[in-house]
Image 1 (cartoon, one colour):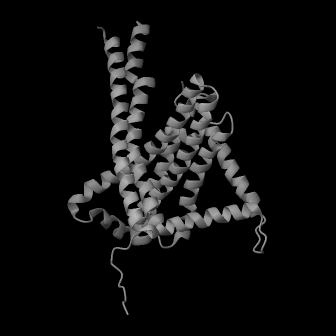
Image 2: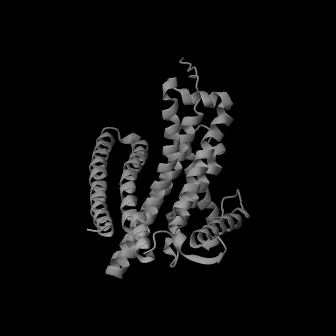
Image 3: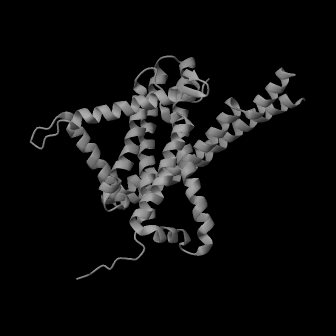
Length: 93
Length: 229
């Protein structure tokens, strides 16, 4: 296999794996966070605004790791520098 | 398939490019400035203020209360900065209802600029509250060994702010673009609604995180005496 094929295959497979891990991990973590928040809401309903706001901030922090994985996948698929370099070399010579 | 509005160029002169990000940012600035000038030009303290004034009052008092709940005891000092952050990102996301519009926060340049504003604002407010020496000493809390970790955490917080906002906005725009080629009518409308929701949540998160960082930098070092009677 020449280098262009290797780059393409590696990018595609790793993009898929990155997205899948980026979806699984934060989903589990956010599920636990929401479950704990609901428990504490049930125990102290008058603190609901504080709990809700803290829950949203925590969810955004967890979500950001999923976003990192998504951005890396997008870079691998659409703005891949190794692929661009290989294409430039292939068409330039 | 274009990732960011940076790639839509309207006009170019040498290396100076007028791309969609800049044009939409200026449009948003114009909208916010002219809109609020029109509303606040006729303020009234009577019993029947105009509808725009009521909306603005709800917004301002809501933001003020959120800032106070985060722990900043004098919200008026920070209201300008934090309120502007929230309003800019929220209106940028809200205007996706207008056809042909791409949110400028879907470009990494805009979100990095906003994150850099927060990065500069946190030491500024910290030094204003605690003085230069007091603020620098806070980097050595709780022990001097934590000094490099505190510095690294400052930089990584800024990076996380930028990438979080960029990723959320870009993913919303991209999903709608992909779905438009698959199921043209109904599903993209649902995804636009979801994009609006995440846009509002991300605006709130951005400003609340900025408020939390400022609160961490400005809280007083010496514990204040509490009188119990």
